[in-house]
Length: 163
Picture 1: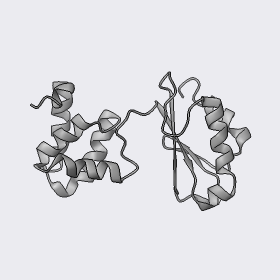
Picture 2: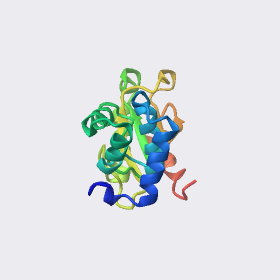
Picture 3: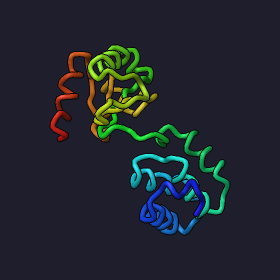
Picture 4: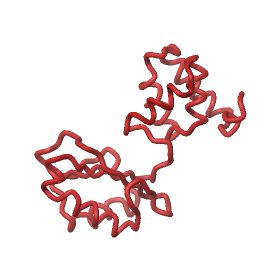
C-alpha cells in the first residue's frame, strides 16, 4: 500500500478493489468502475484513483484523465443535495441564469461550491435532454421543470428536512 492509499481506510481500499474485481479488473470497464467507486465514496479523490489504477494495472494519469474529462465525475466532495442547473440553449433562453442567480443568493455559494453545512452544492451543466421543460434544475436525481426564480425557495424547502 502506498502512502497515498494510506489516507483510505483498509475497508475502503477493499471495497474499491472489490468493485474493480467485479468488472474483471478490465481496463475497458474504467468508466463503469469509476461510476461505482464514486457511488461508494461520493467522489473520486486521488487516493481512490490510485487504487483503481493499481488494480487495473494502468497509469494513474490515465484514470485522472478520464475523471477530469467527464463532468459527471468529481474530485471534491459534494453537498448532501447536489443542484445542477441546465444552461443549455433552451434553458438559457428561458431564464436559467436568473434561476441560477436566485440559487446563488439564497444559498450564499457560487457554482462549484458547497454550503458551509455541507447540505447543498451547485454546478451547471449543458443539457439533460428535457428541453421542453426549460429551464430545468436537477437536485440529485430529481428533475424540476419550467423553474422560475420564484420557485427556487420552494425547491430548497423540499430539502430543509432532508426529504
